[in-house]
Length: 344
Image (cartoon, rainbow, N blue to C red; front, side, top):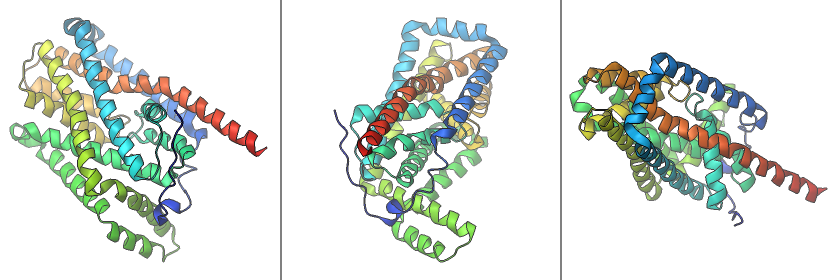
C-alpha cells in the first residue's frame, strides 16, 4: 500500500529552515546504536550482579504463559502509543500508510535507551521523506514525551496517599506537565514570543526562535480535539504495562493491591525520566526495588521482579526496534537511490 502524502501546513513554524537536520543526520546513528549496545551490556552486568538465578527463578514461577502475557501487554502499550503517534502526524500535516509508519515508529525504539529517549527522534529522519519537516518531527517527539510523562504522573497519583515522602517528585512533575501543556496550548502567545525572539540576532535569541518554532508546530498536537484522545491513549498504554507489573507481583508471591503495583511502576518510570539517564536505567530500577523491599518483599524477589518487568517492557521494545531499524533504513536508502536515478 503506497503512502499518501499530504502537503504540510503553510505555517511559519513548519516552513522555516530545518536547523535540526545536522543534529539528526544518519552519520551519528552508529554512535547512538553503540550507546544502546553499551546500555544493554551494562544491564546484563547488573542482572548478573543482582542474581541471575533469582531472575531465572522468577521466569519459571511466571511460566511461559505468564511471560507471554507480560509481552502481550507491552505490545498493547506500543500499539496504543503508535495510534497516538499517527494522530500527531495527521495533525502535523502528513499521512503515512500504517505499515510503513509502524515500522518507522518501532525503529525508534532501537534508540530508546538514550538520555531522555532522545534517540527515538531518529524517526524524524525517515519521516522527512514523507513530507514531514524536521521541525514538525521534533514537535511530534516532544508532544509524545510530554504525553507519556503526563500519563505516568497521573498513574503515580493512584497510590500517592500512602507514600507522602514522594509528593515532591510527583508534585513537581505534575506542575511541569501542566505548565508545559498550557504553554503548548497557547498558540498566540507562542507566536508573539517567536516574533520577539526574531528581533534579535544573538545566539540565544536564535536558539529561542528555533525552540519556539518547535513549540508552535507542537501546538497543533495540543488542541482540545486531539489532546483528549491522545491523553486517553497514553493512559491506557501505560496502564497496560502497570497491569503487567501487577500480575507479575502476584505470580511472585506479593498479592498487593493494584493501586500499589501501579504506583510503584509509575514512580519508577518517573524517577528514571527525571534522572535523564539512558532509558531511565538505574533510576527506575533502584526506585522500584526500594519500594518493593519497603513493602516487605524479599530483596532477591524485588530485584528479580524489577529486572523481569524491565526486560519485558523496555528491552522488548529495544529488540523490536533493532529488528525494524535496518529494514526501515534499507527502504529509505532504496527510496533515495530511486529518486537520484530519476533525477539523473
